[in-house]
Every structure is written in C-alpha cells, then in structure tokens.
Amino acid sequence: MINKGYKLVCLVLVFSAFASCKKSKDPVVEPKPEPPVLSADKVLKTFAFKASKNPVLVNDVNGEIIGDTIYARAFAGTDISKLAPVFTYEGKKVTVGDIAQRSDTTINDFTKLVTYNIIAEDGTKKSYIVKFTDNGVSALYINTNNVPITSKEVYVTGSIKIVSNFKDVAYDGKTEIKGRGNSTWYDMPKKPYRIKLDKKAALLGMPESKNWVLLANYADKTLMRNELAFILSRNIGRAFTPASRYVEVYLNGAYLGNYQLTEQIKEGKGLVDIEEQPKGTTTLPDLAGGYLIEQDLFANGEPIHFYTAKNMPFVIKYPDEDDINQEQKDYIKNHFQKFEDALYAADYTDPVNGYRKYFDVNTYVDHYLINEVIGNPDAFRSTYLFKKRDDDKIYTGPIWDFDKAANNDNRLGDQVHGLMANSAFEPKIWLKRLLTDQSFRQRIRARWNEIKPKIYALTSSMDPIAAKLAVSQVRNFTKWDILNKQSYLELQVNGSYAGEIQYLKTFLNDHIAWLDTKFNSSEYQ
Image (tube, rainbow, N blue to C red; front, side, top):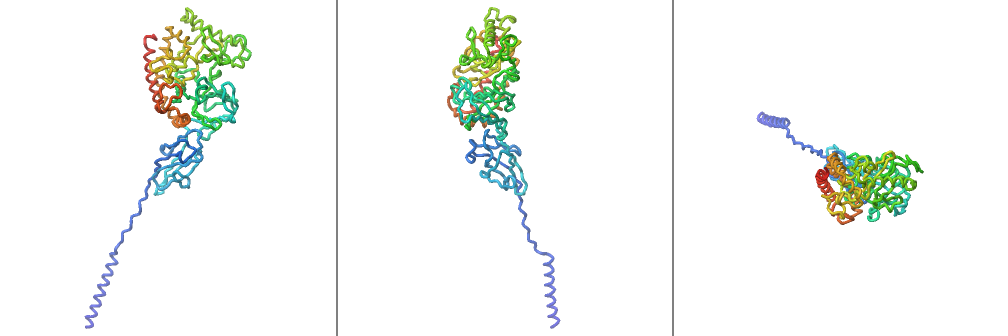
C-alpha cells in the first residue's frame, strides 16, 4: 500500500514538473504596438495680407511663393512695419525664430526680411523668406508745409523725399515746385508739376539734373503712351530722349496717384547738347548758338516767343527768359525766317541752296515717324527744335507729349488707318510743304524700312510695363475712378485697365501694319 501511494505522488510531481518546464520553454509573447509614423509634410500653401485685417493696406497683397521665397508686391509708401499675414500650410506648426505664428493674428515687421519656418511632425522644417517689393515704383513725397500749388508761373518752396523698397531713402532735399502744361493743367483734376531742385541730383538712377517734370498721364488710362514713345525714340538711336521713372506721388501727406518722373527738356550735356551762350552775348560767333526752341500753338501765353511770316508760333526756351537779350531774340527769329523763306522759294528742293541748307531732314523724319507710329494728334503743335553755334541747320527733338495719342482723342475719330500728317492739329504748313518734296517722301520710306523691326517690336514692351504697374494702377484708379467713364477726350471707354492695355496694343499692331503698307506705296517712291 505504501509503495503504491508513494508511486502515485511521485507521478503527480513529475507530471507537474514537466508541465511547468514546458510552460517556461514556450512563453506566450504579447505583440508590441507599432510606433506611430510621424509626417514629414512641411509646405506653405498660401500667404497673403488682407486689407480687412491690416488697416494700412488699401488692397489685399497676395504673396507669390517661388521656391523658398514669398514675393509680396505692395504699393510704394505702404507702412509694412506691423502686418499680420494669413496663411495655410501642411505641417505641425509655423514659427518665426522661436515664436509660434498664428494665421491672421501674429504681427511682424516686414521692413526687414522675415523667415517663416514650417515644422513637420517629424521635427524637420522648411523655411520661407518674405520679400516685399514695390515693383520698382518708388514713393515720392512732396512737402510744401500745406502751401497749395496753384500757379504755372510762381514756384512754391518745399522739400522732396524719394523712398524705394519701402525703407531706402533714394533722395531727400529742398525744391521748388509749380504747375505745368496747358490742357493737362487747366482741364484735368490730376495736375502735372515742374520741379526745380536746389542742386543737381541723379534721381532714381537718371542723369543728374536740377529740373524735373511729374507727368500725371490723366488722359491716358494705360499710363504708358509717353513711355512707349520714349522707348521707340531710344531704340532708333535718337541723340536725346528724356529718362523717366514711375513713382507714387504724395503731396503734404495726401496721395495724388501714379506719376511719371521725367527729365525736363533742357539744354546741357546729356540733354539737348547745344553750346552755352555767355550772358550778355550780342555778337557772332557766340550769338549763333545754341538755342532751344519749341514750336508751340500756345506761344502767345509764354514770355519769350515769336512768329514767322507764315504765322508759325515759337517759344524760346534757351537762352532763359531772365537772361536773353534783344540781339539773341532777333538772331534766332531771323534764322527761322531764313528757313521758312527757303522752304517756300521756287528752288526749295535744291539740295544745296534749298531748305536743307537750314534744316536737318534726318532728325525731323525720325521725329515725324515716331509721332505717326504712336498716332499723336499734338505732333505739330508742340515740337522741340534746336540750333548749334557752328551749324546753320535747325534740328528736331526731343519728343514729348503723347498722352492723347494712339486713338485717344475723339476729335480725330478712328485713326487706325490714318496719318497724323492729315489728321493731327495745326499748324502743319511746314510739314505739308516738306511732303511736296519727293526726296523728303523717299527719306520717310527709306528710314521706315531701316527701323521697321524696332517699330514692330514696340508692343512687346507693353506687358512688362503693365506688370510693373500692376499694383500701382489699382491704387491710381481707386483715387481717380475713371476706368468706366469718359474722363476727357477718349475715343473709347474700355471699362478696365486690362481693357485699356488691349485697346492700345490692338491699335498699335493694326496701325503699324497699315503704315508699313502706306510708306511702301508709290506715294513715297
């Protein structure tokens, strides 16, 4: 009995031990959870500044994200020191430095470069730099201590500051300022101005000068007709074409609009390059030049002017009205009369003794063609001319005044298939006489074909100018709400800035093609 019981106990113990050993050899392993996969997404999707959240802005500024740079194109003169952007992104968070950023809430100073970091869930980051640009259109501040500018004759003293890229002071100095122009001054609410600095300065990279003009371009809703004429003049190699830059003008703190800052047409090196006459000059050879003259329909409103026997009106621009004497007035008047007499003489076409003795045909033909291409109704009632000392010839240029050109004056009607020689305003008697000379017409044809590629390329300049003015024109036409209405003498109201650009481009393309046929016709052989 004892042995049997003992054996049973031992068997149970052995079985238990075996079972225990089996358990220890084959434990049950619980599966561990997979670690979470952290996203590496870190992309800035949109970035903008809303005018509704940033009171200093007139319009929304939508950033353009190119690579790792955000370009914010804003209106010159905008205070960008305290702006809060709105943005969307893929990632965990956005920081500037160590400071977390909230869309539409966090304010930063954008007068310096600001770097936005998009942090991914996995801790990696991508950085974007915000760069504000004024598109090359600087802000020009005029301060007259609130003295109004009401006269074309009387200067008002003041100061001018030009600021580029929102913070870079390009110029800061004293000036005098007065009104300028004829219809642009008397008939239009956006006034043009003439500026005389206290000393010469190279404004915005242009040649040094004391004398500058602010063109309002009110009648031109593209804001670029004058600039296109200047571009064509430079491209065909004219000796002097006024340099110009677009600016945003503020007068005593009030925004006036987009203006074109240009060199004043004056005598001097790099300008109209004629000799300076010593004060008090009364005898030859100094008396022979130089002279700067404007053929001007409104000459009788200017202090120093004269008329030829055929009633052609001229204003003497140099010597200055304060310095010129009677001998100088008589000399230049008599010299212009010599040309007119030769132009209407029986042998006027004689290449030696005819009108060419006193008149440079080449500069006049260039001037004429530019005015025909742009379709300028004022081509012959405002023309600059000059005479050098040791040269009997009268030269033509520089070009000026194209704001009502290119089918922008309803008094002329549609001029797509029209010549300014026929349609532009008087006085045109000299031109009409010149056109009766076959060799003059042949010169028009020859010169046209020489410069034709540059003429056809003119409209390719329009889109870059429109891009430069993309922000500026919006503010300008917010101030001057004229895109949807007749504001002066427009032949057609196009309803939008893009419509005005297309209207001008279509006119120029069609008009140039028509002129090409015209100037290569039998009339010009």
